[in-house]
Length: 465
Image (cartoon, rainbow, N blue to C red; front, side, top):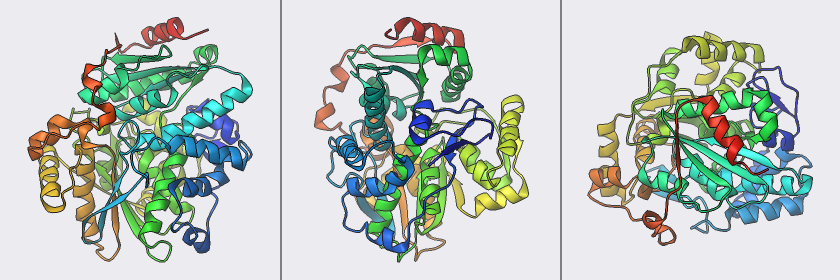
C-alpha cells in the first residue's frame, strides 16, 4: 500500500512513512493510492465480532507490512483497553430508525480517542524499533489536544506541544490539556482562533529547516492514520444494524471534515452507505459550499460547540481530491486560491461528484439548545452541543428517507460542555469518577502570541535533546 499527496508533487510513501510524516512536503495530505474493498461476505462476517476484531479487519489492508498481525492486534488491544464501555462505540436508539453512535467512552470523553489511542500505540512501536525521537505539534479546537496528550504523555521518545485558541475552548477541554503533569507535554494557548493555530501548524511543516531540526510529526486529522482509525466505527455500527444486507446513512457534526471523510472511505471499501450528512453549527462554511459551490471565508463566530468553530476545513481537501478524480494540480490550485484570496469555487463536475455522496445542514445556537432539551425529554439521552447539532440535522434528513436507518455520531460527552448543557436542560452533567478531581489539578500553560517565530522558539527551547 502506497500513499500519495492530494497536491501531486510529493513522493509516494509507505503507511509508516505517511503516519510519521503527517503533512506532505508539497503542502498536501496523504491518501491511499488505492482503497481496498470488502465483499458483502467480508462485511457480513464482522457481525457479532468485538470492536477490536473489526478494527483489525478494517485497518490491516492499509498498513502493509508495518506490523505483523500479532503485533498489530496487540496494539489495538492496548489502544482500547481503557475505554469506559465494553462495546467501545455503542449504539442508542433515539427515535424510529434514528440511532446515536456514542463515541465518547474513551479516556478524554471524545471521538478523537478512537484514533489518537491507536495512532499513539503505532507511533510508539515504530519509534521503539527505530530509536528515533520526534516532536509532535498539534492544533486543536478542543478535543484533539487532550486526546493527543493522553496518548503520548510520559513517553520517552516524544515531545508534545498542543496549540489551542486562548479563551475559545470549554473549561473541561482546557483543563484536560493543561493539567497533565508529565514533562514531555506542553499546552500553548494561542491568541487567535483555531484556524490561526492550524495555520501556524501548517507553516511549521512547510518550514523544512525547522521541520527537520526538531523532527516534526503531526497527529491532527491531517495525519492519515487518524482518518483510518475512524473508518472502523462506521463498519461496526452499520453491521449492528444489518449491513451489508441493509443500507445505512450517517450524520456527522464536523468542522475539519476528517470524521465524515472516514465515512466516505468506508463507503469506498464497500460499506453500503446511502448518504453522508455534514452537520455544521453557525460556522457553516461546509454547508454553504455544498449549497452554492462557493467556499468563502466569512470569519469564525465563537459558539457553544467550539470544536466546530472552523473555516479552513483541512480534510475537505481529501474530498476535493476524489471529486477531481485524483487531480493533484486542480486541488493545489484551489488551495492556493483559498490561501491568497480566502475563497474558491468548485466546478460543476466536482460538485456533482461531492453531492453523489454528501448532504448537509446547519444549526443555529437556539436550535442547538432546543435539541438538547428535546432529546432528553423524548429519549432520555443527554447530548453535548456538537452531538445536538448532528441530531437536529440527522432528524431532518432521516425524514427524507425514513426506511433507511440514520446513525448520528455523538462526538463528545456532555460533561465536556457542562454550562451549555445545563442551560439547555437544567441538568448539570457530572464528569465520570475517573475525572472527578479535574478541577483540583494544577494547570501548566503558556500563553503565546499568534506568531510563528514565537511558537517555534518555545518548541526549540522546551523539547528534549
